[in-house]
Length: 431
Ligand SMILES: CC(=O)SCCNC(=O)CCNC(=O)[C@H](O)C(C)(C)COP(=O)(O)OP(=O)(O)OC[C@H]1O[C@@H](n2cnc3c(N)ncnc32)[C@H](O)[C@@H]1OP(=O)(O)O
Image (cartoon, rainbow, N blue to C red; front, side, top):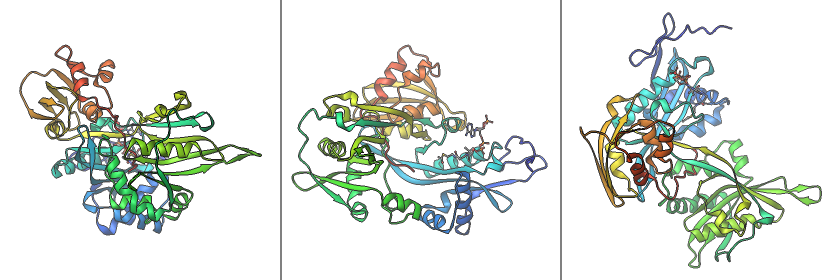
């Protein structure tokens, strides 16, 4: 069946228009439009919405920050943002707009609706003074054009438990198995302590915790959550400094144990808590392997074991993408790995008004960054500034692909020394 929409023509003004076709209105929604918004969003993600899905989603939706594209009265596109903060290099945090729920109905794709929603959303984020927008990209080709760059990476690990002897005595920790309501009470403060030195870690709102701990979750989500076990780690003083949530898969092969312990989350506010929780996972009866996705690329686990090769990284993918909207504010907020002064020119094709030249005067203890007319040391895309911002993506790697213009010889290497950061960025929160 041919689409009833004619061939697209370029978006004009704030409303995508097709010649002889419907005018698509992109605007924020009202409270009454939340059910239609959630239904369209779920369809866009190849799912279905019912009353329950709408009620579970409702508390996280701020209509002022929730955009929909309307074809007549039908919602055909969705995009939402929420205020949060993210840890950045230098043990600091920065306000961010978390972007989520981005969909266009299958009947309305590749006609510019996403582009218009991104335009309006970034306008709003800029107006609110949030220096960064962050998102998890469903597919890598989508967001670079809007100035987002892949900044946080996630690793999937697999360990053969039977071969995973610990290299050193496991630190003393008292472990306690608890239920989900207990997790809802104790986990947030452990998580908050754990994210202090880890760039890329996103603050979790009360609503996010409710969802994770089944206080407000759809029946399907609750059924998954109920399969999980939760264990807390306490130090000698009784302070909880770590927790792990896990479940089991395929425990037996005939009469032989063949189970996989799947780590859903391992959160530690100290290295000793991490060691004790990994030990717990790797010594579980009936399990011959441990799998964990959503781990940092620099996870310390191999260094706990006598045979490091038993920790196999089966996958590494980009996870959080960063969009820098206020270059001076963002660059002056973080700490740096060296002391240097660089003039950086940002080529921002989606929002040229946000790009331009800045002079960064940086050191490990702080930085200033201001607009300048000086000649640049290097020119890079806005998306590449987002990619390097959290310290996990080397600018030299992007330069090796010919995507950075180095005007001053050695400027890329100097940028690496300034921006790269250890530990690597990591975000253990899906949003
Ligand atoms: C943060 C999040 O929520 S991530 C979730 C993203 N959503 C999904 O993956 C759900 C399924 N997909 C969709 O709903 C839609 O295809 C979207 C939202 C990804 C894209 O919406 P559209 O309205 O089709 O995008 P739009 O027409 O504005 O495309 C703009 C450009 O991006 C390109 N583009 C859009 N989606 C994709 C994609 N999945 N892969 C590659 N390129 C893409 C288009 O080709 C177009 O390129 P052009 O300007 O060179 O012609």
